[in-house]
Image (cartoon, rainbow, N blue to C red; front, side, top):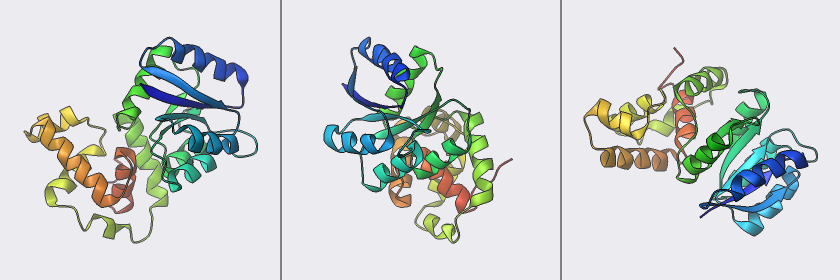
Length: 215
């Protein structure tokens, strides 16, 4: 069972997501919050698997709430909800540790798929969105980030470059003539060595270090 915390200041939006969750046997609504401050409290209390986080809210917005949750060591994966595709709030939330983003008018089936994807430890970005993210972060690379890649083997760096193009594990396996299990092992090692939560954060680290660059 995947337990989901819904965070949005609009009751109508929360009720819409609640209806979608209640119709799926493998999903459970763990709780609802109307702003970021309440989200922090409920996340600690309820320990959800996934948090659907609106970015624009009163009191404490979704970006700062995401940052504080990630810094607190939460195991929950955070999906950012936005009205505008990849706006500044979304970029900031991804920097802060969100695992993906969804438009608020997402189809119910897509919402459910997205929750399942991030709950499984994967990030929610196709090649096009990944490419735009990398291009966006090109202008705010972290200083001295190159040291973060020192621990990676040549094979791990190769896989990280391919991750930055948005390839799935299955596609990586096919491209490198490896088994999918071997690819998963490599990806896990990359995340551990870079000390990041998921593939999105690994791609950001790769860009920061100059390993990949926008086309």
